Length: 410
Image (cartoon, rainbow, N blue to C red; front, side, top):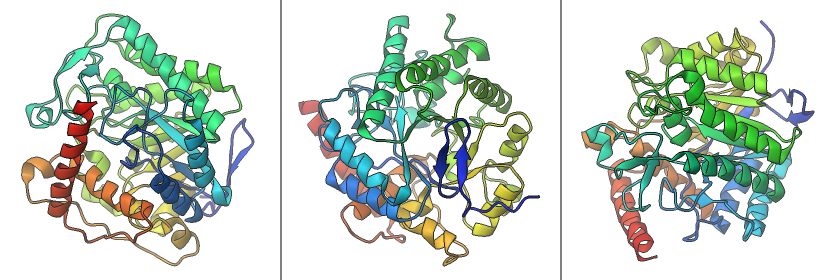
């Protein structure tokens, strides 16, 4: 067993890119875009706080590649260079303190809230389970031409991110968004070259990676966030996930972030965690250990970590190369420094529960509650770790109702 710790630096293979430590601020949806889906001063302030907070790598919340495909009302969109100066200011804020800042790029597919977009797009016209479908419009299947157009949108957004000063990009292929939908045999039931076998279902992500690489060059880092499993019957399995990651490794992917679940099965928020898993903290540690036996690609393991001792142990055993933190960084933007300088030994975060089962049983409430904490940081205010989830829900309904009305007026 080696003596690696979260404080040690890491050199990205074949890139000579150095991360000052092993802590990654994982992506969270900020909901801080302007009405035109552009970065704002509150977003700059939030990312400057995170950069000062000590993480070696910050990954942004999802930036959408198409302003007609928004997962939420205040998503940021980067599809042309008309307002690139705002993205340059964002990159400048997030790269202070020798911090790397990677833009997470995404297309939501059919995972779009009702009223936010005119239509929902997916690999196949398959609805969610009824309990979740109430939040989303019905979807239609993408045409071959539309699939090709989306692939090029990912490449263009990545190229613009590089021009703006972001130090890398992360392709979001997890949590039930469009790429995740293509990977899943549950949601992708196409009979053409984009569906069927895992090789075909992987083709969409493969072509996105290749197109991005052709635009940004070999020296610019590209990462992928992917599920270890969807944790659903007939969904994306561990074996398929291992196959996809091995293929990406062979293509030259620079960093893989492991997560799991979707909003149908929100394991990403710690739902249904076994006691043995909770003891080791990291939700997907067992999977990461198995994956490391098959691939040498650098890994970020996100979800569940709360103590430095567990983080260091995961690094020492070689199960992961980086520790991803999301919710702790939403409550304490300087949590990385607290860990690095041993000013905190353990963090306890309570589940976000409204008391309404049809809300609590899916992951949407977690997103909104933490987005409100990020909004406070962006305004220069302190977070409220004990803020009422029920009050958070009422505020969310009010805000989304207003934003939805504005969207429909446009």
